[in-house]
Image 1 (spheres, one colour):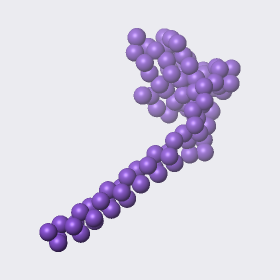
Image 2 (tube, helix red, strand yellow; image 1 turned 120 degrees about the horizontal axis):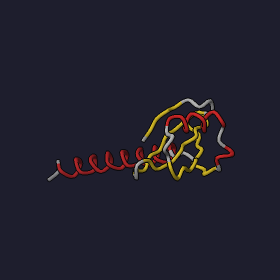
Image 3 (cartoon, rainbow, N blue to C red; image 1 turned 180 degrees about the vertical axis):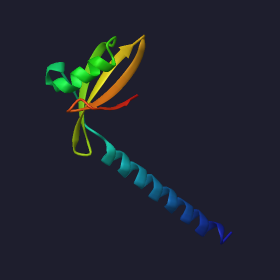
Image 4 (cartoon, rainbow, N blue to C red; image 1 turned 180 degrees about the horizontal axis):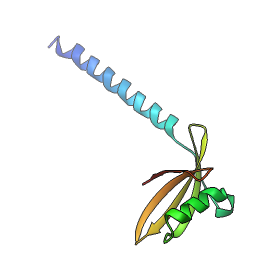
Length: 97
């Protein structure tokens, strides 16, 4: 019985510390997303998107800052599926998800 109490307290402290770390990471990794019209997207990014996804429909653009760089994300539909693709200001493709 005496051994269980200190172990329980130690276990609870570890859970509290892990929870605090997870919450702090969530708050610091939150990125600010801002919907923008296509007229505010750099022409190089729009051109790269249109070349890569010529059949895309319902395209919406979002801008966000990642590690100090401005990223342009296109949210769109292709063959009745939703996609997102990220481009940098120079039109460089970053990723698709």
